[in-house]
Length: 595
Image 1 (cartoon, one colour):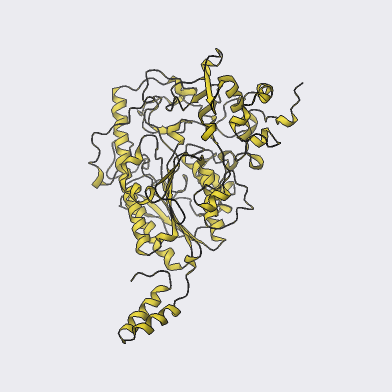
Image 2 (cartoon, helix red, strand yellow; image 1 turned 180 degrees about the horizontal axis):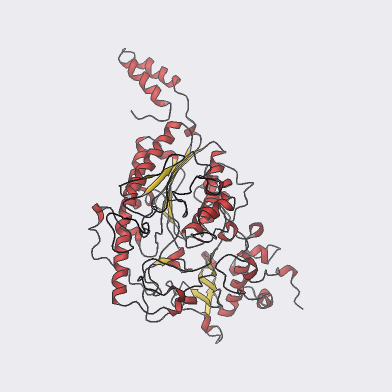
């Protein structure tokens, strides 16, 4: 008989004891009275599985049948879920704080503008998700990758390199071994650093399962975060011997999966290594990939799929462990990643950091109590700053006094009630692009400025539209009607001056200029996110509340106002967040003087 809760094992022992005394009926009654109710029945548990750099647009989910079986088919997929910054440190900071990257100001993977040191310096280690949970009766555990810059030489050594606060226990990967697939190094709480000779995903999986059992034994509602590095590219310590030494920087699979998908190649979508490109910024300077580069891209793609197979098995192991403990029906199991990825789309070598759909559109799925089964939600737009308020809502923890830049996702009826519908995602980046699968001799000096602001904005029902808008720091603009151009290969901005190109919003056709004017205003409205502007940006432009969607804003009544707004333009390209350089703050329509 499986124990139903922490103290139910006590009841089971008494049952067996009385059965042998031939007093079965009495034994059951006494056992039931002897078993106190576990706190785990009062609040839900959470297991949060976070992969690293996993794509949505290159069909990686199609190669994970166990993920489909145990989470997607048993729960809900949010098909319009986005990262607000396509890089791991900034995205993970947003994930655990519910704040956009410009508000966390963790904008890079290395100091001084990013990494664990910046996370701590910004005070985020004193006020983020695990602290909110443990202050409200939960235990919280984490294993795997948390942030770049957590180093065996400094993590937990002093105030500037503190341990992760709020976690009941955390066993995390430390550099320079974080991305070493076969010799990962980890540190649990205050214990000494330990380097393993285990395949990293299997190691993280076993540690995650141990935390689930440990959490169950503690008898409190729990959160367990499990974060393998797959399918991130492998790196290894400079100047150190690594066995086996990989000949290239590639994702590494467990040996049992290295034979899989021998003939699979990058999906040949319209934006894959195109003959011409309409991209902006440094992307427009890229030549077509040659035969050797295409071979490298396909090899990279296969290695990513192979590396994800152990993650797929991790999902099954988590579900089995919860089921064995009879916790599955009261546990939310969530699967997502930090950011997306590209391999050859728009001619870009393997990496991330762009505003294109490949890099920001990411998987998000959940199963658990009150979650609809086998449902694909395409009617809502969600992103990573929505995750922290979502989890708190599911846990029954008040969102105040936290000033989130996101809103609870409609995962359950409680989430539906708390959700504030938004049709947009603000996307941003500062610094250089991230090349991981390019030839070693690539000239990075040609690709310095990857600073931009962007929007993904989508409507439903009568207000159907699907747009992508990018403003580069060098002055380039890209606008895509992704209903007609889902792969972002036909930039409409060059056609704006001719007046011939139009965009359909809510069944009405509008000139590209008219749409661009509204999007410029919207980009500027979300660039600071004061007073909830990242959730309700139109209310900062129309303070009387009569505009809440792009379709509303297209009313001809507002043409002169949007035409008069200063267009989104950077003062110059900074490699870090500089609010003063990111265009003017627009004056609201209600205070705008037409004269």
